[in-house]
Image 1 (cartoon, one colour):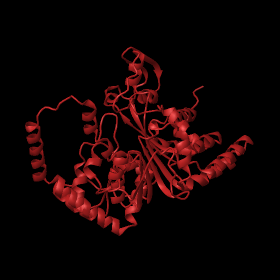
Image 2 (cartoon, one colour):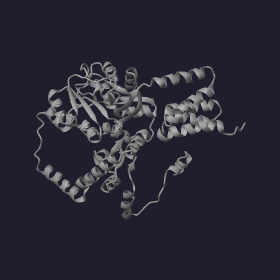
Image 3 (tube, one colour):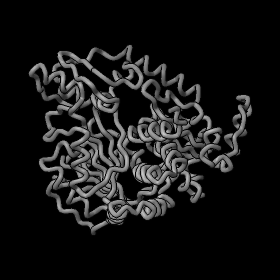
Image 4 (cartoon, one colour):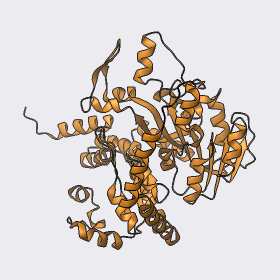
Length: 460
């Protein structure tokens, strides 16, 4: 509440005290939408989210994030957005507020899912069935490890809930490159997408995908000619795809034309800087595997920096980057920096972000077309700064911030200019907004420290 008052939005909210459990049903039923914006930390992830099941049981539509087990709990009976992404969260809320039909649909789905899956008697029965199967199942043969690994992964049947949550709630026409059997697309269609088109190289898998998607194109994504007009898709999904391509840059440039001007590209890409890969390399080993970062079908390998370069060269700008982390990262001291050792390798003088990068096995990317208008604005701002016209530069940035109040890059630039102009209160307000959503933003932290130091009385 204090934070809401500090940034001037407290009047938009009604803060209520705790209620006895037997009255929670009344609160759920009084709400049009239930929102749980759970954010995972290094030491904690959402375990079950019982409040989500309670709201669903009351028929209240739910919106939440991809933290921990939430995707498994909510399934297709609610809207999931990336954690710590206020823009996507606001978009999901606005979407539900504007559609009584969607409110009713998700309310019904939520109620049905809560009753069918999470009723105490149902849960007890399923637990009993699991134990019975474990006790009855004979030991599995290890004669065919490749077949066993494929069965365990369900490679072509993955729903990829974390990817689903990154697809904008309002995306209507979606292209899923490397769609497998179309499980992700099936969920997106159930959530309201008008069209999901898949591209799949394996003929047998592509045939099965036709049962789940609007349309399936069978062939090599690098050479397949797409029968669509420019700008046809609102979202293009490249989940675990780019590392399998001979020329990922050319493929992305070719796909770029089919993305609408306001469209989004969603991708997941393995991180070859993962500590285990480095450890093995230091021991002279580079062993390909059935799956993982060194999957035997991977042709390309990326670090975070190379991912950023690839998207920039393809005419795209990153709007979101998150990660799938090794659990070992949680065993490090909080906010660890300095030296890290594993095996025979010791890396010294690492920043917090460099340390974290070593434990990322996959990056999750959201990008959009590089905005020509934004590039023009940046040139005008740079021109004003070069000529010493700080006020004009500040004015141009403030005009942009009126429509995009949480654009952290623009907030940082505006803060720097305000600092130069002596408007330190405004500069600090910008930095507070940045750090609200990105607590470890190094440039914002450094500038805030510098500004606070300059405000201290001179003891000399």
